[in-house]
Image (cartoon, rainbow, N blue to C red):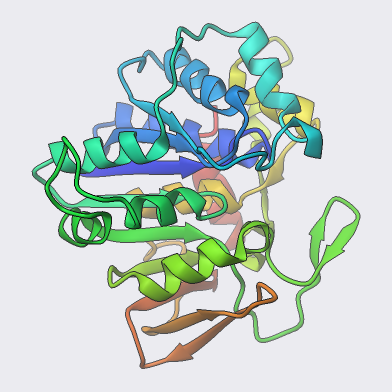
Length: 301
């Protein structure tokens, strides 16, 4: 069974909620075990939203942490509408939210197995983990702990399309993929410093829309449906659900994958892949987009 850790910027885009739905559904099938989920934003509602979703799936035991980064993707930036809606409508019992570094170090130290680590947002929590000193959970520093306990990272971020891709946030054009752009320094530190293999889920691969089953029955309600309804009132692009799905089930039946190489993050957030120089790979494209949509839709509920 795959042991899974998820770091998410939940509340910014509804596909994070869809990704957590997939993780919980696959755990219910016995395919993975979720060790911890952390929020990479400064908003308390992000951590509370994670807990509310965990409790909806009867998984209140899963540890939740949040970033200590100040004023990062918080309410002043307009984010968190759907996470606050979920917190207002669904049960959460968190009264104290530990730091992400605390939760991640504890989860890694406790397991005897190699972990698959999925990141669905900016990489600030991963940078903090890598830079962390020894503590009561482990005598290893963060780099050594990750090197010892993490089999691979699946990172939703960047893009490596041969053709020109116009990166969009709503109607706003961006020069590079959103997750990388929010904290270029952390992205550079993590991606350039990690010795652990990384599989990237790039922007263009996630443009397919999923979440259709959430809206197939008018009377069906869940925190996942609420996230999609508040954020975009319908199915949404699938960047984060793809990342969780391939972290657990692999890529062979759904995606063409690049050869191994090295990803460099430029100062403007653009990502460059050079083959034959490292242990990075990325999803190139879908083998069959309709099959990918069908596979993801089965578990976004």
